[in-house]
Image (cartoon, rainbow, N blue to C red; front, side, top):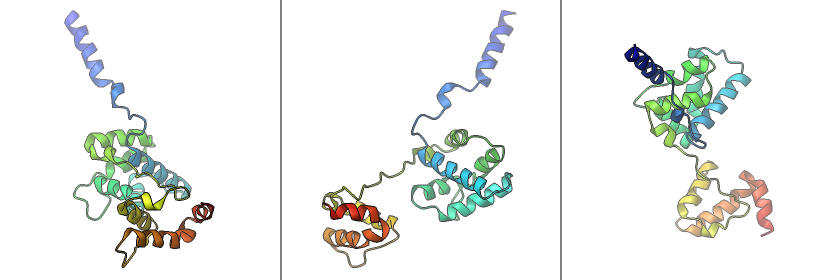
Length: 180
């Protein structure tokens, strides 16, 4: 009898998910951020919450994704060049209204790289000294704006181009910089 009760306790402990599986604060930030915005988009556009509709909308959203979010889409197989396809690990639970955090927990078990993605820190253009940034960071600013600097050979060329385009892409930062 003691053997059976010990076995049943072991069975219960094996079936109950442990607390350590929950995502920690800031973990899976790209997954959670992208899927929360995606879920809100589905609600705003009155998309039917079935697996197929969600999958089609996810593929469409991933075509427009850039940077780390595009990398997330690649990991779940929602890009055309992806090697694996685990889109159903997102679309099916979302059709059952499973919270985004839980979906990301399950994705983490499938592919740990998904939760290693972190958003790049945003540069505060209104206060940063562009001369102190690396050329790589200056290129990233232009890339985020969808611009390039053809013929730029030196750091000063990139800085000049950013200052030229700042009123168009970051008008508030441009106004604040005139005070510097």
